Image 1 (cartoon, chains in turn purple, brown):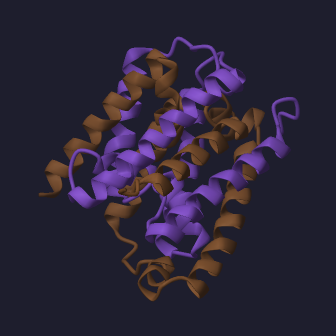
Image 2 (spheres, helix red, strand yellow):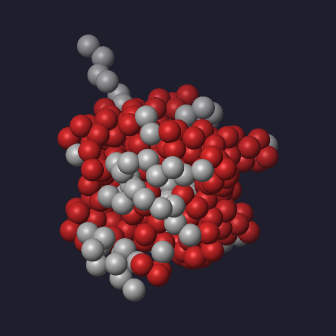
Length: 145
Length: 136
């Protein structure tokens, strides 16, 4: 059943176009994929040359978050009271899984799919299906809409 | 005068964050609502459609007009669809579904000092660290 009250197709599409534009910019200037898990994991390791632009990108993410919190505060929900265990397990799995699988929603789901990479198509289909299964089994965290 | 060399990356990160916020993807409840087939909010599919569409279009332009070494990077990397890829995507999918955070939105939420985003990101960094250690 589609939850038609929650569904916001236009902001979703506009936000998606902005994301895509940002990803294309990074490809045009540096030939790099805008994969957040790869960028974040590179911050504390990898080559110094890479680390410099990766920190700049993350600074941009934080600046964006800061501007959103003032200019468009509804972008962030009230805290939901998610349990510690759930947060820590989820974080560990996301961190470990994105390294093992070489990407997340941005690197595989946006950039990889956009360039027709078979690996990214498979990864995206798998994590969306498993995400849906996980919600079916463990439910959603209440609140925060 | 030396030019600031990271401006493109800073701008890319900034626009990326604003895009996530405008799309509603910085609210983990909305992401979980996409993954919840019983009360389905298809918004995330529209985010993906918009993002993939414009990225595919612009990647094509870049491939045609940029220096060959940059253009070559647009081409998908060839690699096997192996156990690591699938298992990694499975683990990521479980973590994503449990809370509704993937790396981008969690990072963008840090400046709001949201306790949940901070706990999630610190655990995520630990998970990345473990994965890197095991690869060596």
